Amino acid sequence: MKAVSIIGPKNSGKTTLGLKLAEHFKSQGLTVAAAKFSHHGLDWQDTDTAKYAKICNAVAGLGPDETFVHWTDRRFLPDILPLLTADVLIVEGGKSLGYLPRILCLNGDLSDGTDWLVPDLAIATYGEKEIEGVPALDSIEALADIVLEKGFFLPGMDCETCGRPDCRTLAAEIVKGTITTKACLALHNSIEVNINGASIGMKPFVEDLIAASIREMLRTLKGYSPGKATITLDV
Image (cartoon, rainbow, N blue to C red):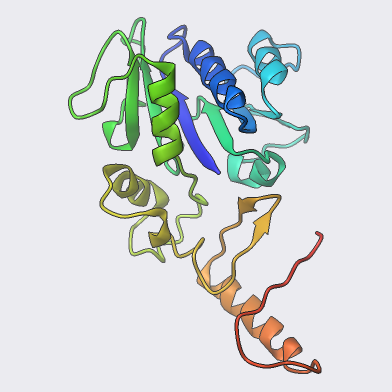
């Protein structure tokens, strides 16, 4: 799955950009999911969410007290990723997320806080203003191309097994192009787990526990021989 977040101040055109990108990807025959963050609670009849629902294959909303596809307690984006099966995930909002790249939507008044204005996670800017060192793109086609080229989603576990203190540090290096997502050992280890096409990360302790259990069970089966095993499981 290719993934990107669209970050910017209120009324900067984030939803408009997200909808245009979604429409473009759908026109290319790709499936698209959208996740929208809200600081003011959620309403399925909310205009922006309803607009995404008309275009995307799957839509999720994440608020301070609830999440839909619909639980009554707070969940986090990596928790619901397996439900958002798509070729591309467009995330609107989520300023604190450090495990995926972002497009900075630089329209309107930027004086209302710029803690989200972090160029090291930005793969592009869109709008009236520019940031040195970050490609400024005004074409939906060009933005879509860069999302397909550079989009990614890390597990957000901050497990440090990659040698970095957190996923945000690793994400910044991936955006810079000095490494690839293969540096994330939680995603690339001896066990690969995908649920509905979404990769599930696991810490080394969990990997070792599962791997050891499966190996010992497989050794008891007739026809067993050492090698690469493929197991398909409905969960």
